[in-house]
Image (cartoon, rainbow, N blue to C red; front, side):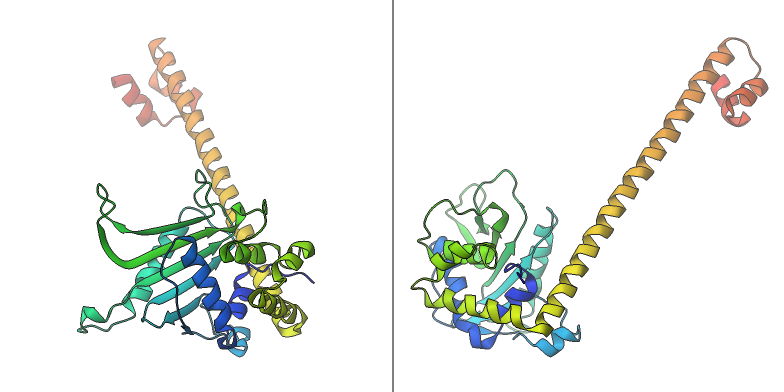
Length: 290
């Protein structure tokens, strides 16, 4: 049975396992290489994947956190659904991870650069065609002046990625894996050929789909996300309905007020105007005195 390779559960299983630190290193380096950033030599997973905790729903954090040989902090977030508010969430996660490096009273020198990599399957920047964007802290009028290298936030919009050429860069190969694994066999055959890293990733995918407990958790997670999407959709529809009802009521009252003004101008008493329009006598009197 096919599994979305960009699902948070699978990526947590794939990149958050200490036995797969080489896969995580390869993925982060591919992201860095796409923006000509320094490559990592090694990476340590800070919150290793634990099936028991995940199954018991004690592990609420689905992201992958890591640290490289220079102490730089990494947070790999995965999100299938979202909107423009996702940017605020990413900034919050960056701030939380950056803040967690020190305690109150500690020297600020202990703070290290913190890099967030957001792998999302929806269009966040709809007027922007690029799949990969990276944000840093720079002076607005003089972008050559960098405030600090302690903030880097990547957004990788998988929904914009399509196979339109042969894959050459490691970054494109990783995106193709997340996008097409389990659904496009011919592309996967091309990807894993003479590529030990993606061959290992492909084997891990197969192991995941054959593990009954993992698949049970995966489907439960997918159902949870679908239910949440339905709940939000229903709430939006109900909100629209309430707005329409409110608009209708507002329009009806406006019509009654206009009718009342005409009746008053024609000489009808406020009492009769109130009776014919249904407006409270106090409102009619205010219209008469206006």
